[in-house]
Length: 400
View 1 (spheres, one colour):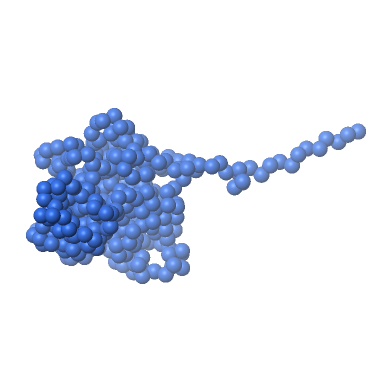
View 2 (cartoon, one colour):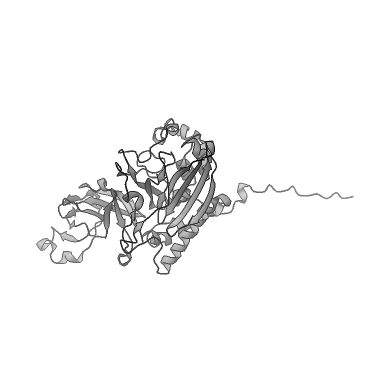
């Protein structure tokens, strides 16, 4: 009698069986000519604080392009491509003068809009041939203590928006600005794709896990509670409405928003105060694998854009923590950078709690498609009246 031999069952789900996957380039890659890069270039973006534009040139990398920010001696801010159009050396080593920035190599002088106004090595200072030369430049405007640039097609340049949260100030309030990336504690550049942070804004369920039960109370005990959540789209992005049941029958209501293209509109998680949102943060893509955040906020004291509640103040700030402490108490920085330079979207297993992220990605994809069809994306305005944006974000407590 022959006894059948059955093969040993395979171990399922091993790393060897892992499929080769990639990231979703249409939503993450920001260079010129890429789908997302062309969408992002249809909006204004902050490229620095107003104090960053001085008579000392400042290197700026934005949407994969290397630029130089400066302010001429007459007070006008300028943003030019860093490679001089004459022989290609960087204008970072240029000298700022009354009429613009002078290249260190052969002295060509460019104004804040890229016009060549002097070529000292040429007869008659280059006249009239210098008028045929234009150093690539981008329009800039200053608002809320930030310098904004428009890097898209000139015939589609929109109006720079205004936001009620930064326009309607209570007595004693003023606008303060900061260029600190999330969790960095001092102006650091985050080494991962911008979308890994941006979509985190519409992920309320990570708050009680990462910021509460896993790492201890990083915000306040109230934020450690698992919320009841509703997601919705708006005419400008995606919003998240969360409620938490507090002691004594009180209810905390919290609305956060993402506003296209990159705005994170998040009430203070340290529960500094209740009411309409205090700050707006722009998640600025530096290139495909780096981002930073510029924030403008209503404050009553300088340097207190995000005042910490007493519970959170007992914990050391991220910048003061050792690598070992960060390993034991991870924050958004560790969770998002830990996804890699660009997360592998093909490996994800989305669940019901990820509905906000799915909604945001689909909205971004629709706007990419709209731009490819030659249309204007949502959230761009071509007159001052429609460019005034009223936000819904805020945090409130209802009595029992």
